[in-house]
Length: 287
Image 1 (cartoon, rainbow, N blue to C red):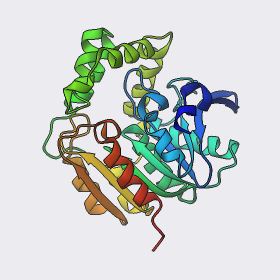
Image 2: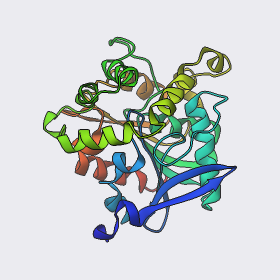
Image 3: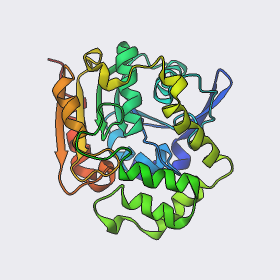
């Protein structure tokens, strides 16, 4: 089955309320929704394509390009992006006939899964979230983090040099920063309209007007009662590891798994261990 799971064979597009929504789908059984992170040139496939064959052996896997990323159009954003993203993922689930699912979310994708767990708890059975945004604020690191500083630098001047600097903050093992990876991300990030959409997404995340009526996840941890596995790279320079401890202390039903010698891209640097730990949690019988 692995050889059949290419970008092309798993790719699909649907239109929801006028919005073109691109996603990948493979496997059968219990639904698993995998939500990618943010950053220049990111797509569901670039984030989780290498993990799809493993999880498709156990689940019906849906990997959407989040609104404004990859092949999914960007809707008008009238609320903080992660909350808007949660509502759009729920609409995609409706379109695909999925009442509820287990979730894996990386970074921004983790924040969107957590927003769903807080606002639409019946849709999220369990979630494994990796270096998740929104769950805390840094206690011992500068804000914004080094990773975010490099990301914003690229968005202001999208050069190859700044792309390399940003990717270097994503991984602990610098041998993973290959020319092939940089070329792929540059192609994706500099395609028509991508930079403008990415700027709009981050603008909606930090827009003071939109945030006036928004309560951050870390201020309402008791609202997230979904069984949660947090996965964190100890050397994460995008969302530093100290953020794990606040959420680990206050979420009602949570476990924390830490990976040493690992940055923000756990699914890449610790691929087999990530898959093993996430699978055990997501298939565990409900207590």
